[in-house]
Picture 1 (cartoon, rainbow, N blue to C red):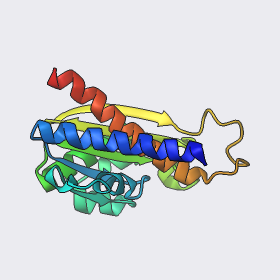
Picture 2: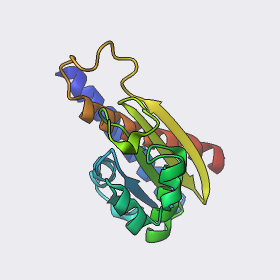
Picture 3: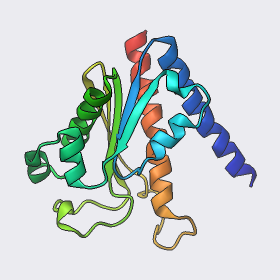
Length: 184
């Protein structure tokens, strides 16, 4: 129980620090989510006063919504896959334009196994692609959040939620790292 409380506090600290830095620098943020299913938006809006920097987010869980809402071109899915840096960059650019923000975060990946034709590259469960867009410059993070677990199919946590939570926290941490280098 104590570990869970510490993890929750760490999560709140990352979110609060993100919002504080954005506000201090007059920056606005928007998010485009796929595999994280709105969890990143939830985290950002869980802090009082978030509306001063958070302008909105969309959960585009299917290819059609990525195309229709964010303007991601079909050729990106056909050439690179929905699970790619190219896809999350297009999503980030689309959501930044939609909400007129200087900062955007986009996520797409495999919270669990995907045997559909969308995963024609046969990527593993747990792999998430993130793009952080800062003033139109793209930064990429791809990480498999399950690769360090012995056998993720038999552990007692919900691996989907684990992947979603870790991807969101790492996205915010990645944003902070890249903001640091730009704001100094």
